Image (cartoon, rainbow over all chains, first blue to last red; front, side, top):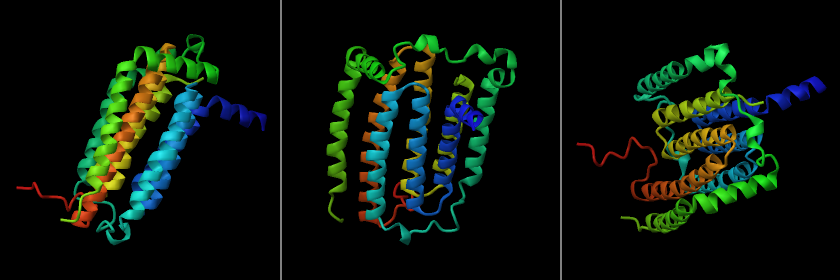
Length: 184
Length: 100
């Protein structure tokens, strides 16, 4: 039992990451849009767990608030507004574009393995990129993490932050203006 | 102990699933969700890089990306709703007004 708990503690990130990948696959391949949205919610929560295991507590909680609290609800609202049962994708979910999708993903896999083959297959260079906890001092407690992030956000990245707030305002107005049009 | 290899691998798998979803599915809603998934894969790399370098720059940038993703979803879903109202479909194959 303790061994299992220790194993989970050591591989926290990988467990949550694989859960996120599984939920993403379920999202792409489920026929019903509501099931897709729920799998998307599960993937977002798993990614929040990944952030927590990377000692980014503030980003992890913001992920839960923004995605699980905001974006998933938006998606569910649109699924409710749009009567999806009327548009079953003809012939299942596989289509003309599928061979090209397979080719594109396989090509991306090949490029990834080519670029990172040294890191993945060479045991000698394995600890070259291992995360160093002693470098992340000051990020290890939640309050300190929030402090550090806010210092970065409001001091160093103040201009991007303000631009983001303007963009959010523009997106709000645009969303209302686009969705409000009368039926032509 | 989280290794950078693991982070890169998970993030790549998420990105690959997102690309496959955008290319395979014809439902505009699912395509938007796949785009969100790809943004999250990039965010994971940002956070891992912040952890690796011991600075908060990556985490701050991940928060900014999250905000942009929210803006994108708001506009995208408004487009889907407008599309459904005008053309009674959410399939991207049926939207071919610009097709020559």
